[in-house]
Each structure stands twice: as structure tokens, then as C-alpha cells.
Image (cartoon, rainbow over all chains, first blue to last red):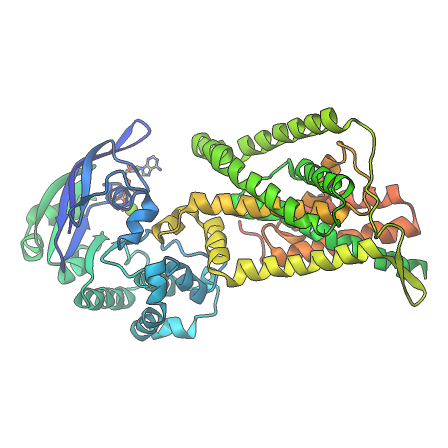
Length: 234
Length: 293
Ligand SMILES: Nc1ncnc2c1ncn2[C@@H]1O[C@H](COP(=O)(O)OP(=O)(O)OP(=O)(O)O)[C@@H](O)[C@H]1O
Ligand SMILES: [Mg+2]
């Protein structure tokens, strides 16, 4: 479904990615692991089109989207829940969800998607008229996931959804990611929470300083000493 | 009685101030850029309306159709061909660069108007000129009354557009986080163009509302830019309701102080108020939000 070939991305003269490759197949949950500054956010922002690669290509559903503008990629169902949630703070939860379903295709499914969101996250229904600027961290994450669901994702990318959340909330967020995946949405999960993410993932990649270092199935990664060491060594 | 009349005058003036301020406020709120050519654009609109009224015998309020569309289209193109480019290439200096660009552009507009229309003041005589309506012991000049009503209705329409329509919501979302709206499939550059087009179109509308009673020279732009900025600072940036409250407030301060003391004292106070608000409550007097650290 998604294939990155040897991506190189620069911020000015700083090389953040020096050849990242990965592949996500239909129906999978793939996790992208790496410590702080490894280039995870850079990778998914490049997939989303917010950053332009200097070299390499991005293929989505057989189509080369390397030079497609970000907003057009989103319309193909390539959806991202960004790092730090990035909600529209001066809008209510409900309005955020409406903006999520701005595009025509999503607008026609707005009603059923809203019901789906409120079913998965009943808390969001309670908070629907609250400005998102005043939500708690966990509620913000739920709202960001809901907003992404409103976009009718084909491939859902989540950038560190567990960041700053209590373990119990992390558990429930991961639970809902799993549930969304079961509904047929392919997932690319960016995480530092190795343990929880490998629990739900099918496969994973580890990157360091903008390069692939390890990849394998979730169970292979769970048993990988190098990975354990890398994470203890941070 | 003098004060009551001043209050009425203030409200009539304030209504038109609110669409003027919206012209600045939407561009400022959406793109975080100050359009320092707000006043000059308004003056260009005034001359367009003036020509339509005097040369083509058009009703001043019918000229809205033309000023609104012509300036709106112009604003769209200007954003698309120039300002988006400046924003893209300037990085973190985008704000100041666009401000300088619009200031320079404003100068060009003034010079062109001076070249075409000369330096003398002109005013359009319309079928509303000199007519006024008695409301009890007070009187309201008919053109000011009609203009104020149209301005208030237009502001309400803009409010509903920004808050209840899909497009308006997308524009507001873009103003809060431009990269994230792209992730929602929204073409943020197009939203900027539309935002700027609305800003300019509202200045065109304001011009048509002023043309029946306001004397025009090429040089009145700067003071309108300042007035708009003051109202926006008082009412809160990008806040449609704030524009009408701010507009009314400034209209009232001007007319009440003008009638009690003097017009020049009123102007001084308006500018002082601007400074005080910036010092004390920079997010706007009307804003409920407290300032972020
Ligand atoms: N806008 C930027 N300008 C310059 N350098 C940047 C920019 N954004 C990120 N970087 C650098 O690129 C590298 C990769 O950053 P990135 O945000 O992709 O890391 P990450 O893996 O997402 O880390 P984290 O887990 O902390 O979010 C880092 O060294 C970072 O300092
Ligand atoms: Mg990151």
C-alpha cells in the first residue's frame, strides 16, 4: 500500500533522513521506532507531503506521490494524526471534527463517521462543545484520532499517540487503534513506547539518525537485544 | 440632547467602521499579516464608486456589486501571485516582509490615484445627499443611516459565513494552524487567497457605503488604515463580533468626545486608547481569552 524508497530529507543543510525505506501492506499495523531526533516525525511529514524529499520516492497504492501537494495526498486517504495533536484550539471538538470532514468524500460520510467516533470515544460526545484548547492531554489525543477518522482514512499514520499520557490512557488509545485497524484501516504507528506498540503491531522498523537499522516482525523485534540495548542506552 | 445626537452619530459611523475593520481583521486573523494598504485600497474603492455614481448615474448602493467584486477579485489575484510567494520565500520574516510589501503597494496606489484624479477633494452628489430622517428630536442623515444598516447586515453575514459555512470554518482552521489543515485535504494557499479576497471585497463594500457622504482625496487612506488597526486591536484580531463592537466603540468615542470637547481631542483619545489597550490587554478588549505566555 505504501512504499518509501531510500528517502533523503534535509532541513536546510542538515540531513535529517539519509535513506529511509519502509513498506506498509494493506491491513497491517506497522510501527516505526526510534529515539528522540531519529527522524520519525520527519519521515511521516515527508509521507504526508509537508516536507519534500531531496532524493527517493514515495509510492501509495501504486501511484508515485513524491511530488504531490500535501492536501491532495490527504484526499487519497493518507491521513496523519500529527505529533502534539495539532487540534484547532479556538474551535470546539465538534468543529474540529467538521473541519476533518471538509473534503467532499468525507462530507458525505460525515454523519456515520461522527456516530462511529462518539461510539469509540463516548467522552468526545460529552465534550463536543468544549474548545479543544481546554481539553486534557488524553482528550486531545482522542479528539485528534476522531478528527482523523472523520477524514475516511485508508492509511492512518499516528505520530507518538502515547506521548504524555498515563499508562491506562495509553492502553485505551492503543486498544482503539487496534479496533480501527480491524475495521479495515491500515496503520503506520510512530512510537517510542516499544513495549505497548509492539504488542499491537504486526511488523516494525527501527531508525537511528535518519537511517534504517533494524526491521522485522513484532515478535522478532520483541526478542531483539540490539533494540532493547538501544532503548536502554538513550 | 447633544449627547444623544452624538450617540446616534457614533452608531451610524461605527457601523461602517466595522466593515472597514473586518477588511483588515480577516487578512490579519487568517494570514497573520497586517495589510497596511487597507486604507489605500478603500480609497481606490471610493474612486471606483465615485466614477460609477457620477459618470454612470448609478445608485451608490448599487455600486457595491462592482466595488465588492472588483476589489475581491483583485485581492484574490494579489494573494495568489504575490503575497503567497513572499510568505513562502521569507520564512520567519514573512510577517514584516508582507507588511512592507503592502505599505509599498499602498504608496503606489496613492500615487496612481493622484496621477489620475489630481489632488483636490471630490464628493459625489447622490439622490440621498442632504436628506435626513427625524427620529424624535434627533436627526439621522439618510445616507449614513442606510450605510450603517448595510454595514451591520454585512457584518452579520460575514459572521455566519465564518462560523457556520464549510468554507468559513476551513478558513478559520487555516488561520489557527496552516500545516494541519493541509493534512485534512484543505488547500491552505487557496484559503489564503479567499481570505484576502474577502478582506478586499469588504473594503470595496465599505467604499460604496462611504461614497454618498464622504469627501475623497487620494490621501485619506492612511488614517483609515490606522482606524481599522485600532478597531481590530480593541475588538480582537480575526474576531468578527469584535469588529462590530470595536467599530461601534470607536465611532461612539469619536462622536461623543467630539461633541463634548472637540474633534481633535477625540482623535487624540482614540489613539491613546489604542496604546493603552496594547499595553494592558493585547488580545483585545472584547476578547474573553486571557493572553498566552
Ligand atoms: N524544522 C527543523 N529544522 C531543522 N532541524 C529539524 C527540524 N525539525 C527536526 N529537525 C531535526 O531533524 C532531526 C529529526 O527530527 P524528528 O522530529 O524527525 O525526530 P523524531 O524522531 O520525531 O524525534 P522525537 O521522538 O523527539 O519526536 C532532529 O535532529 C531534529 O533536530
Ligand atoms: Mg517526533
